[in-house]
Amino acid sequence: MKSIYQFTLEDMIEEFIEINEKKFRASQVFEWIYRKGVYSFDNMNNLSKDLRAKLNEHYLCSLLTMKEKQESKDGTIKYLFELEDGGLIETVLMVHDYGKSLCVTSQLGCNMGCSFCASGLLKKQRNLSTSEMVLQVLTVQEDIQDRISHVVVMGTGEPFDNYEQVMKFVYIINHAKGLAIGARHITISTCGLVDKIEQFSNEGLQVNLAISLHAPNNDIRNQLMPINRKYSMEVLRDALKKYIEKTNRRVTFEYILLGGVNDSLAQARQLAHYMRGLNAYVNLIPYNSVDESGFHQSTKASIQAFKDELLRLRINATLRKEHGSDIDGACGQLRAKRVGGVHHGNR
Image 1 (cartoon, one colour):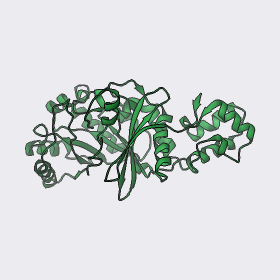
Image 2 (spheres, rainbow, N blue to C red; image 1 turned 60 degrees about the horizontal axis):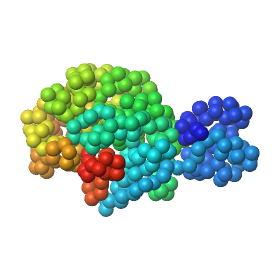
Image 3 (cartoon, rainbow, N blue to C red; image 1 turned 90 degrees about the horizontal axis):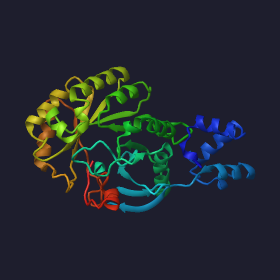
């Protein structure tokens, strides 16, 4: 059976025509799901009994199965969901003063192999479907009985390695008759798949692009992130320059600070040189230690000095607030513990 959550409104209209139903019925179902939060065809009371029976026969409408839920003192909630095939994925809710943000997973496991990251400790089994991403948002909204205002596709997996499904997901949650999450409240994070960055620039969306950079030069990035051997920092920068010129959108660089690896003042200057001339800013991220990696978090003094040096060099830099430090707060950590016996994690 197909999931009803895999369809954009346009796709759902076509689907309903194929099952000999009128277009407006698709719009009604779409509204029931995304505007009214009804996740059972039987409760869609402006549909005929026959139509409800037909929908139950052809489509899945249930939410995800919650296997575990961890709540932090700061309001962060980490969910472990079970998929139809038994796969386990993580989704993280973060509470900010501007609203509730959800970190969505795009793959079951990850093949990027970043050496500091728990997500990559469990290799990619498959891409998530559009519906499995949509359901992360809907299931959390149902659990908290509140609206998700921001979405970041930064959970387990490389979103641009699952490009088509991720883009369908974005169109559904952004649609005015869907969840109506503003495009500028949606962020997609990539480790730097250059060909997909170019494709993304042609989408005509105001969605934010974040780059997992984590290094100031090729030598360090080659060690941390295998993708850099295919797309060097220079190739990545050229692609981002074209992306910025085409879209007039600012890019975020994500930079996890690893003690003694990429957090010196000299490396801050290298990073500033790399960013010079780009409409971009850097989001500095304290590291959550992974026993298996051998890396550790930079000291608070080193983090502050690194940030101050970037600011001195007129690079816009922010320090990400730590969320869920008292739970399995890092990406991949909870799933890895359940699936592979890994005890700590980070992304």
